[in-house]
Image 1: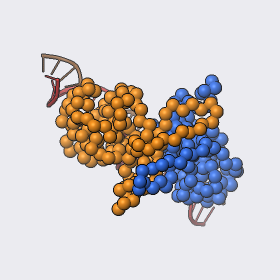
Image 2: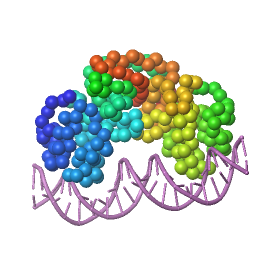
Image 3: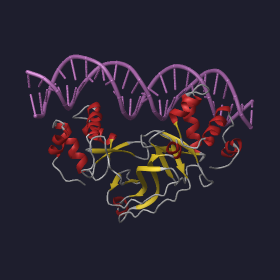
Image 4: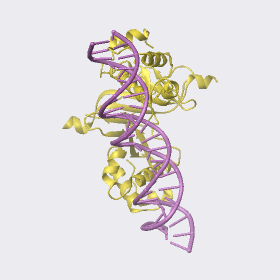
Length: 142
Length: 142
DNA sequence: TTAAGTGCAAAATCTTTGCAAATGT
DNA sequence: ACATTTGCAAAGATTTTGCACTTAA
């Protein structure tokens, strides 16, 4: 997870430091797992309009602050981009997403080695996205 | 790709052999790539109601005839289950999905070796879903 | 002050549900 | 003939857009 000052990130991105943006970014960065859109609505729906949440998330994504993950059920989830390589419209988040079947959380496994895939002739891989389905650390330990 | 008689498949699944089901299953099985919901609507929307298409697809999925893939944009796509291991509510489709950034097609790479992933302690993998993003065979050759 | 951000209303999609009519066996 | 399947209407859910009001710089 990237270490940073929320307010600096917003400033660097050229986004105004509004109350809601600071709270949302704090929340996403404190979260160990990728946060779903519905979760964010539940948490911030009282202080911000649903539309505002959508707009903030797409602004964060555009600026390379968070990346969107479509989980195995098709739900959008958001997680911090984990390095300084992500720039506007240019994401590099080639890590594995672990979808837990017990708690439903999606975790970005930044440190898991990503295997090289041998593709058939004439297939050129640019990037990829790997989702593993199983039981996460927390649920295994419980 | 599985070889079969469309009508037998429907029969075995206990589904009535209606005109639309036969056409849809023929189409999906003839397709080299996973077909998106919007595509299916464009093709069959004149002979069948949108709702019917939804219902047929979920029936096919429930019976283990096709599997649903959520592509990287969150769009549902459908492809034939590739072996006889898929049964009702019990899919085994552990292959790689190749998403082409040129033509947008999603191809099930049944023959690509799926790498073993070393997960962190206490993470138990049950199954997984791997999407590779790049340029497919057809678009590379063009 | 003024450009960017937000809220509200409304539209555009996407997906599901209920029920009457049509179809397959 | 009878259970299944389909079409239509409508409800729900999700996401986007437009415009006036508000806020940060």
